[in-house]
Amino acid sequence: MNDGEIVELSSEFANIYSVEDGERILREPELVTETMEAAQKGGFDHFMLKEIYEQPQVARELIHLYEKSEDLDDVIGALKQAKNIYFIGCGTSYNACVSGAVFFNRIANRAVFPVAATQFMAQYHQSISSEDIGIFVSQSGETKDVLNAVEIAKKRGMRIYSLVNVVGSTLTKKSEIWLPLACGYEISVPATKTFTNQLIAFLYLAYRMGDKSLDDFDKLPDLMENEIKKSTSIVQKALPFVQDWNDLYCLGYGLSFPIALEGALKLKEITYSHCEGMLSTEFKHGPLAAVTNRYPVIFVSTLNDIPLIISGINEVTCRGGFAIAVGPENENLRANANYLIPVTKSTDEISSILSVIPLQLISYYMCLARGFDPDFPRNLSKTLTVD
Ligand code: M6R
Image 1: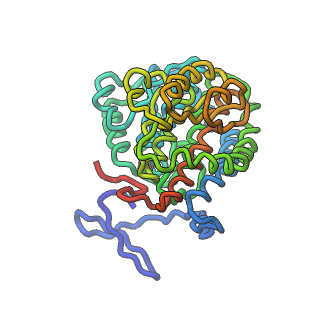
Image 2: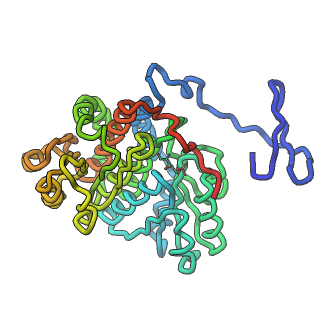
């Protein structure tokens, strides 16, 4: 359905009418290829856990889809020619935009503006033009804040590309080109598999933009599978250090900064504990004052950033705080943090994607320990169609 339409639905028929004049609208139906099985928990206690476990498989499918897609050559060509590139989204999708911008800088030497959709108007509206491309990122493709930004961008002539999970959603219809996230249904309110596939999509584009080899890519789904298997028990052992706190931080730097933002968002969303995600280097500029005895601070690190992250860890531990590190197995990181959740060693880009998995699992198990339902957190809905 489109905006301004109403449907009369029965087991026999579905008639669409215009709200404005009541006229019947005739339209060819589109076939939804998802099965009923995809909308069931399939033996898992919650959709969230099922969707966390589906990440390697949907990653595999996305990589396969992108590697055989000829349309992507045009997308890469256009991105290379664009004057400015913007990545625009909300919530988890915004966090993916920040990762995307770091990937583009590191791999393709290309500066990108990642921006929260609602800030797009205030920050960039006067500066954009038809020489620019915006990649609008959304699981649902129906988020009103994102669609508002699309309208503003269109009026300025900007080219509208998008990265969307729901086929046939409003965002796909408003885009010149849309790239699928190919995750199937994501039913649980906290986004998980769509986040990792958003990161994979951006990483793929960055590799192609930078004319770099895609070899690392094919290994990623297996690494993700392994990460889920090995993290679960290690994460569960970390629960006593965090689960009773109503306030904590999740910090990262560079590639792990957006991962820390996403980890903090997951924790807030389903544990109802306030968790702030921020740059580890900013912590000493004020928030450090919050640290008391055993106050938990989660540090996310990639291999190259370990020395800087350790410096942040020491600021916390020397004041009695409790530092949990999520990063590659490393002697110094293990020695300096109070608890290490090791992430498989790989390139820093791939490790950053892997490191969100333990954070998703901490949120999930902490949510259960606090007696809440991860799939349907209070006050939230899966799709936000209001301003
Ligand atoms: O459907 P979208 O990706 O546009 O949704 C944007 C946010 O509302 C969404 O990512 C929200 O932050 C998630 N529930 C977080 O897990």
